Structure formats: structure tokens, C-alpha cells
Length: 135
Image 1 (cartoon, rainbow, N blue to C red):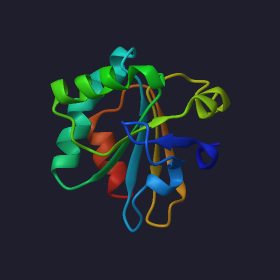
Image 2: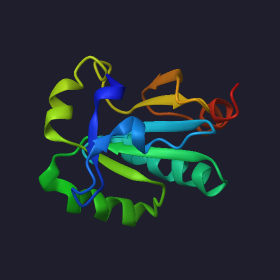
Image 3: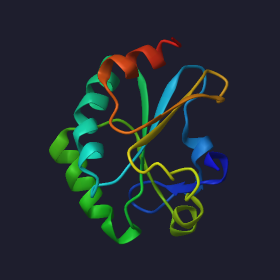
């Protein structure tokens, strides 16, 4: 399902599959979140800290397209500068099974782009750092 999820940048431009937005050659946490999800919002600061330390994080917002300004405002307020995309309406409709445990949901992708771990619920910094180290 992740491979079929279409996303755009936060301005609604550059449509592509989320797998094409994931950096290769290193471990990456792809975190799926939304502004209406309190644990998701709480995680933003932790992910920013991990990103600032040189680790790769990709945020995938599940907010509606007409809420892009809200997403941008929240990211600015939280100081979250790691790369972000937003799912398209069609992708949101197809994401049901992927997100059946709810948000936040994350996958850890290895150097080749393969999903090696998943995480449902609020993530701790030690878990994130261990996952990004391949542990």
C-alpha cells in the first residue's frame, strides 16, 4: 500500500508516489501524521531533534488538501524542518488497511528502500534512534 500512495509537496505540486520521496542509501523513518492527532503533533519536536542530528525523516501528512496552510503553520510553530509531503485525496481513501491501527503510524525503510520495521502510536526517541541505526 505504501508504494501506491500518491503525495504532493505542501503546495499541492509535484505529484509522485511516496516511495519516490524517500531518500535512498540510508535508513529513513517515514512518519504518517495529521494536525488533528495529538500524539502526532507531540512527535514533531522529537523527529525534528533526530533530523537535526543528521538522520533522515520524511513526514507524510494525512490532512485534507484544503488544510495545507494549517499543516504549514503547525510545522512552522513546532520548528519542524524535515521533509514533508501530503497525501492526495485518492491515496487517503486507499490507505485504510495501512492505517487500521490509527495515527501516528511509521515505517522504517532501509538503504535499499525496503520496509524493515513498523510502529503504531507515539514513538519514543530511543526507539527512533535505534531503528535508524538498523538495530
